[in-house]
Amino acid sequence: MPDLKTADAVVDDGADDIIYPTTIPFLLVHLACIGMLWTGVTPEILLVAFVLYVVRMFGVTAGYHRYFSHRTYRTSRIGQFLLAFLAQSSAQRGAIWWAAQHRAHHKYSDTPQDVHSPRHRGFLYAHVGWIFSRRESKADLSLVSDLTRYPELVWLNKYHLVPAFVLAIGVTLIWGWAGLFGGFFLSTSLLYHGTFMINSVAHVSGKQRYLTGDDSRNNWLLALITLGEGWHNNHHYYQTSTRQGFRWWEIDISYYTLRLLSIPRLVTELRSPPADVVHAQRPVSQGVLERVAHQLAESFPLEAIADRVGQAWWESRAALELSGKGAGRRLGQLQDSLAEFARQELPTLDELRTRARSMFAEGPHLEQVVERGRQVILERLSRSVLDRQPGVSLA
Ligand SMILES: [Zn+2]
Ligand SMILES: [Zn+2]
Image (tube, protein in one colour):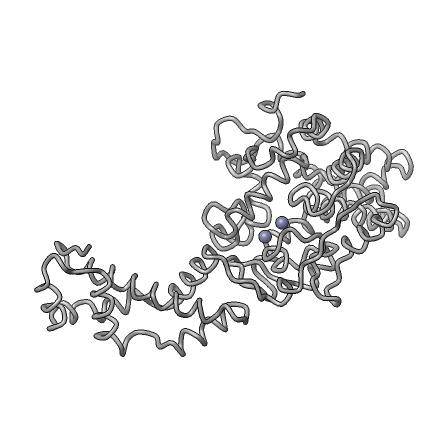
């Protein structure tokens, strides 16, 4: 088995220097498109580019994403290798590397640890900047031990450009230089940006049907461009489904293709979301509830409220009474007392409800979010008010 330490998936020191050898092919593919000016473009070559885009986008979504990253269906060992080969002909690095990065994305979606979150590093960084960062480009192999068991996948992950070279040579032999520049390089560039739009656009633009605690969205245009990946909020909500368009009108070409491939049993055990998932009837996890409640609380100007309330509160009778209780003082009492004192300044439950409806997906979980959001506001306010009176600490 090839040494994983030398595999592309591990980078030695985590230095944050921009540009390193692995990104050179990415830059060259873009530059090479200029060659079309010299070779010319014919309708036939554009058709080649289109077909190469569609077939390889299927490799990206059905291979890299729905198979290797999420294992949403099964195939034979040969089928698995062919999927990795097809996916890697898009020159988006090894299937093992891709899956590790993607699993990390779901683990930390839109938190500061997310590899590519528009919320924290901006749109351009989420789209393309992150692949130039050496630190972000190293993959955590502990997340993909189910894939590193296969020596042939590890080999392909190490020599990740082999499939792209094979395709480029094949295209050149059949259609000449025009095939290479207009067919291979153009479609590979478009494929990069089609894929990367899921990391950037699908976390910024579109609708959120489900409460996921992250910024993932459903975007029909993106779903067409990416053969179904644009139903990204669906996918973040229920990742184990092969099918990402949950409703019949949510076009998901990768899923339809996989259904066809399942007739001769080339792939098996495709998964669809259960009805209670589609209708958002499942209870929201504690982790998601916490993240969403904090988002809701932070949408109000908590520091400004603390500024207005803090000084007056410490000078009030309520504060005196609470200080008089000595060791019996509790954060909870402070919160109750503050809630009463600052009633005029705090958002009402109705205001919280309206805000939550404008920020998140509608559903039975919103009332929980509103209640927890109000608690979070009181907790934050109590801490801010305490910070304005140094030397006082509550248990
Ligand atoms: Zn995913
Ligand atoms: Zn995402």
